[in-house]
Image (tube, rainbow over all chains, first blue to last red; front, top):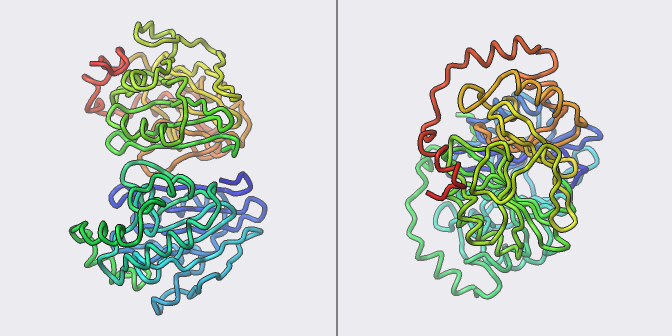
Length: 232
Length: 232
């Protein structure tokens, strides 16, 4: 974490979702990544208390386990919603493409296409921090068995893109179910049970194909809602 | 947060407790603050993966809402348990006094007596971060109606000690119930509804006397267990 940033990691207990509020202390411009509908009042209050001007609301992907707070936060702040253009959604303001840069204050954020959990998943990078959504989790990864998930794509996204970053890059995921708050590329290369460097693609695909997970409780309401920025 | 530290904030959902694992990257020596019994395996695994040598296990106070993992972690690591000497406990290795300094690697940590939630509560300070236990929470504070809590003492601890620190000092509490992870002295001076600078001592004491909270669910087992470092 850079001391040149205002940085707040925020947690929502029901879906164990992390939201990130990041601001430029010099200009007060800020972004939020993956806000949760039920926590919009909390997040908006914090934005006001910190005297931030929210410029962008970024989604790492179309979530299946909670409804996004993006639409409500846009109403309150006027910020622009950005998500991968490949979802072809009508409600966001910005359709992002691989490698696209956005700027808030003096801070650059780069969007990288990292498909696998869904085909439109993006990882965002600021300085030496990445916000990986559900692609790379701490000692885990997102499931690949619904929406247009692909274990082949996820393996490539993590091993060929994310693991090419420096070992000291910090990993901030969209979820953790065990109370961990961040990791690093170096730690995941070593200790991720599914994706560490000793696991090959066929082994990874076998692991993912055998998970046999129940669908997320909220998938039937969350996905349709999230196609409309949570405004249902 | 200083980039010269290994820093992991860890969360336990049932009691909404934050544990902090902090290491010196140069020497690998580390401390943990307020470990939770049920999360000892998680914490120990992380200590091993990070290749840290745990030197001290620090308690901010005798907790009433969860059982400490200190005794179990001491068994696994050989680290020394430290808590305010005023509790007169026999199981810890170090009885701390106000102003005492401990060192791990090249990092200094100072223990300040901040009574109020219990009489033995301590706040720990490393660089520009403080670990406040249940004395100062984010936009709140610990209750003062059991053990030997005192709203008068808590007011003095926060307003005369903690609020004398620089506004940019980051506040890391033992709990948050709304998914916030840290605050700062400047933010709490302004926005803490009970303790902001416009609230006087009589008003604070009235607020605390009217809370009428139920006892924590686990108090009858947690406090006796925590008098023995959780080894029951």
